[in-house]
Length: 254
Image (cartoon, rainbow, N blue to C red; front, side, top):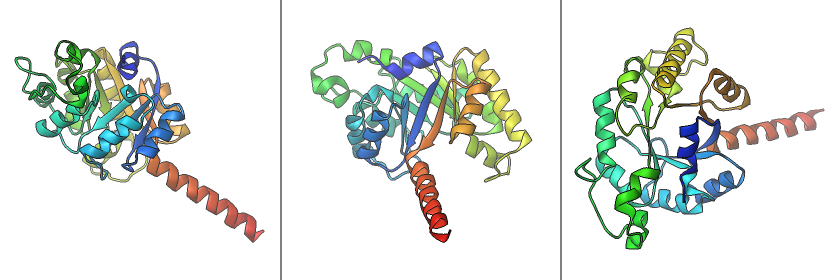
């Protein structure tokens, strides 16, 4: 199946995504049925493990729209995620071109990288796909996150690394990296995001960011971001439940 998410990045089509942190295949199935252009299955800040990620890939209506973020940038975890069939990976906390080259090498078999080989994994149909070794990179997407001023400055070099398909700005950690963790709005933070967006597009690749809610997501799309995480399963449950309970409490008090 063609990687619809990667095709969207190549054509710079606007894509709205949902962040999945509950470790629940039901959440992924529901989100994919609701029409999300892409889903992020998170392992960095969630209880997900390789087996739960595999279950969620199976639950998705179109698994090619699923991006998996490993718990850290690590070659062994990367190999295991690729073997279970993850086609889109987002590596957190990439600061330099050297780190970007490293993560790409983990996704390629020798002589182009260091990925270990197995002939009977889910990614190659448990050995039924005889063309996998020749075609696997065609539908593989590698995204790196930049989350500090240094990383923002290094975007031109990071984006030039062969195999990097897109760069995703992490606004929360970027705010923390300038000593303002938890601050909602800040001029320096906005300047760094705009600088990063400009550099990513000058490099000729798609730019992504996280911006929950209609107002923030619309702001980022209007600024030129190609794909935005517009909400999350946890965030939507909290906001939805609080809004409903608050409205009921208000009506009871009238």
